Amino acid sequence: MAHHYNTLGEVVYNESLPFWRFSVKNGWKQKGKWVKIYRVEVRRTLAGFKATKSPYTLTAVWYTQVRIIDPLNNRNYMKFKNIYEIPCISSMNKNYPIDIMGVVFNTEAHFDDPEIPKMVFYIRDNIESEIKCVATYGHAYAFRDGFEIMRGRGQVIVVLKMWRVWSFMSYFGPPELWLETYGGLSDFRFNPRLKEVEEFMQSLNNSDPYVRRHGAMGPL
Image (tube, rainbow, N blue to C red; front, side, top):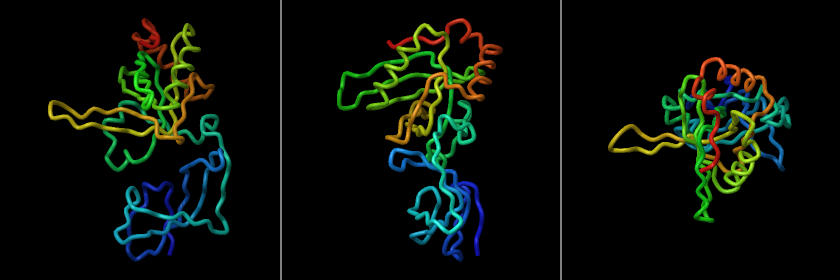
């Protein structure tokens, strides 16, 4: 008996099934390449399997398809989250990296500790929602250098690919939420030529007086 799902997050535990079969669009790096995998079997390894927390094994079958892709150049692969949706993301969904875009309006360089270099920046959308982002290690230096190159070119849109949602509980207010790089899975690009980015830029020009007035601010 086989059940069909579109993503791992849709898999529901059923102890009567020894495995699940579904289409999956999750990607990871294989010898330096990103791949998209369709139609594999998912075998649970422990009783009480939960898709977001328990170990599982993806097993190829005769009709499994594997395609090499470039996520930031493949608009069909990108699944952008809106910034205002992030505070509502459930604990289950925080286990999965997300894609998002926004205009950079402030940055903070933290390179005093060479063991944990960080580049903190903030992004806004077209309804004045904003979120903190943290690039670490090699991503921190790449963001600093890349953003410096973009200086003087007007508003800068950054596309974040596969960044993790983190939260910090506070006794004095709501939890702090931010996005952070997740090892080699994460990537980013400034002003990429994607249809979604062009539409986002247009919406900024039409509806966001903050961006029109101030643009993006450089590193502090």
